[in-house]
Each structure stands twice: as C-alpha cells, then as structure tokens.
Image 1 (tube, rainbow, N blue to C red):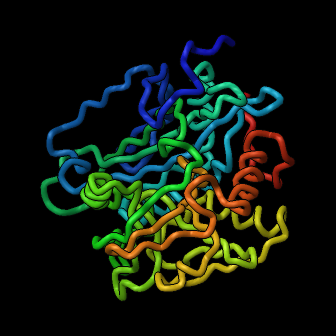
Image 2 (image 1 turned 90 degrees about the horizontal axis):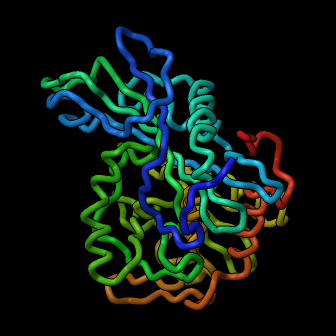
Length: 341
C-alpha cells in the first residue's frame, strides 16, 4: 500500500479530508447496517435536533504505525464505552459498542494510506460522533440520529510539541455540579470556546478550570486532564464527578503503577498545593502529555521546578512508556492494542 504524499513530520493538529468515512442512521427505533462512504458532506433539515438543542456527542482516538509496520488502534473499547455513557446522558440511542469498534477498523482500513509512517511524530486521529437529525422544535430528544466516523492525519496538538506550556487559572467554569462535565458532549466544548480564545489572546496556551462550587480545587483544562508529580515522585490526578474520564489518564495511572512502580493518588487537588508539586502535565488523546511549566493565577505565578525548557524527568518517563506501548516498542497490557492491518 502506497502512502499519501504528505509532509508527515510537519503536520499540525488540523483537518485533512481523507477518502472514506463511516455512516449509520437510527430510525424507527433501530440502527441500520451502516456503510463506508466517500461523501464528506452532511445534509440535514434546518430544524434538526443537533442545531436546535445541541444534541451531539463525540469521541477521539488514534491509529498508529508500529515499529514492526502494523497499523493499530489504542484501547477503542474504552472509547466505545465512554460514548455509550455520553449517549445515555443526552437521551440518545447507544451505538452498540462492538459495532463501534468494527466501524473504527473499517474506516482506518479504508484510509490506510493516510496513517502516518512510524517515527514521523504524526498519527491518524479518529473522530466518531453522533447527532440528532430529525426536526425538533419543542424541547425534547430527537427521534432520529446519525453516527459517523471520519479520520484525519495530525501532528502535535500544541505547537512546540513537548515544550512546557504557560497556562492560566480561568475565571470561567467548565462544567456545573451534577452537569455534563463527565461526558463528551459538544455543548461542553462550545461553552469553553470563549475562555480559550481569551486565554490565547492573553498569551496562554490553555486554561486551568477550578471546581465551580468552591473554586478551590483543580479540575481540568478545556480538552485535557491534569497530572501532577510530587517531589517524592508520586503521580497525583484530580478526582471530581465533573471531570471527563480521560482514557489517556487512566492508561498513565496503570503505566505509573505497573511499569514504573510509582505510587498513585487519585484525589481532590487544591489550587493552593499546586506550587508544591515538582511537575505538571496535561494528558489526553490529542496531546498524550503536554508539560506545563508555569501557571498564572491572576498575576501570581506558579513556576514548576521542572522549568520551561523541557518535559520533567518523571513526566518524560510516563510519556515514553505510554507512547512506547502505543507504537509497539514495549509490550502492551492485554487488550490495549487492537491490530487493524
């Protein structure tokens, strides 16, 4: 199979239209068989539920070329499960989890020429999503839905790759208590857009959101979970019912415990204790881990001892181990790697 002629090592995190995508429709209480199609455009009624009441959810995962030349996907079963949870919360029909995995495999196979080569630093980003499609004018769930998956080759999420970021403590709330912060709903990200644009205008890479109830505890950023490393090399991750359960974070916790023999704490993290950590990182599918070097809290700077030059040593071990598993350099725990080709 011949790869597309792309400048793989210089890709940004942007959309490049590929050859094929998967589509399945829900009507009269059932999903159809679905199919891989070539048309990237969607035509919907002006009153479709997705437009009127933001009834849409999505997922994000990646396919990689391993060192031995296989094309693999990382833990798609967890994305299928998380999407099912999102669907239930927004009163949408669950797309069957086994069919989700099969659809991911079909789409990646159909776009194998777009999977970046090993060692390029790029990956194939996979975006499953679902939306209400029939006309809805009263406030209620739609009756018909569309499930789709497209893929696009991407480079690093943050410009500069592993160079430490400067972020700010946001005055905005990412999610409400007992709200939808724990699911991957499009509306959560729409609410964060003003905050991230404002942060970028002020020279910051991202926001640190605090818990909306007391504004004393660290939650997450607009698109990633936090990890912290203590001065005695423990991994600490914030715990909250309104944090999205990151598959990357969950995997890093396992890697820390079982590959690096680290102690792990999943607990509430107070903003006032962040200054006492040795390292900080943002973790998620898109970024894997992006190190944080400086956090600005309304003019007061918290400078992490790991500095602004490179990823901290413990964060680097976590990053190298997880990406080593994903890329086939290290043996993966059972069930983590799905071979596609």
